[in-house]
Amino acid sequence: MAGGWLRVDTQTTVWTAVMPGPGFGWHGFYSGWYAYWQVTQTQIAVIETTLFDVRSQRIVWSATSETINPSSVQKDAPGFADVILASLRKDDFLHASR
Image (cartoon, rainbow, N blue to C red; front, side, top):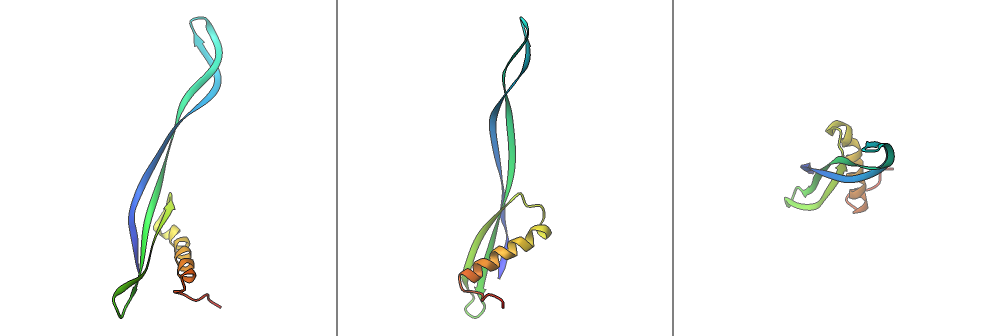
């Protein structure tokens, strides 16, 4: 089996929020609604896993997975492995352990 990071994408979301608040103008203090920008960035790591048949040297199974805001390979690897193993069991490449 081979696997590795395919790429890391950054998704940026920008939206305007509105909130009430005081202000100061020509006629002194007043209250009103004020708009402000909110910006968030999300990193999406795309991971590819490929299972080869050693005898025929052909690909027998392949999957692409995504994880959001990965912290590190060491921390995210166990969860990633669980997802891949579950997919291999679902597709009858592994039998459930007893």
